[in-house]
Length: 232
Image (cartoon, rainbow, N blue to C red; front, top):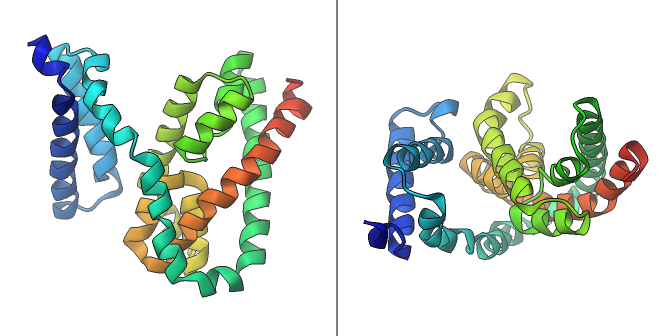
């Protein structure tokens, strides 16, 4: 059976099949906790545990989808191009709001790490949690963090954003399309952008823009927060 598990098609087909079923389930029962990505993640993890299939065997095929993160992030530039006029009009407010959010986020992350006594490696690894995976790995490596921890935190942040983002926007009465997109993309990176696209083209475009701006801000502010608050 190990021959089947280690075949690249196994992990690839399993991931696509489970996700497609999760999407159909979400369309039938659209709730925050039935988010397709969340459901697919839970089902695949449960399946691997129950069957005893090693994660490394599954990941041989699953890594194919992981390699598509970069191209899919670049593809988000299409809706951004189509709403370029909005980006120009709101450029100042977007940059300022994301800068403030990044400062608050990195500061709270450093205080969280200090309060709970996280080790240096763990603390540095969780800083780029709101940056898309491709950027987060680079930031983590630059700060001498652990890439594996960073990836887990980034994916978890994205899933939480996709699950809780829309209800929170509704709870606080945030109806502006630009603000909605910036909030989801700046917090949940590519996964949050997927949630933004469900709201509309403008929200998706602003979320895609926020991914790049947030990444740049984190490169600047994450090392400063680590240095000032944690002394690293």
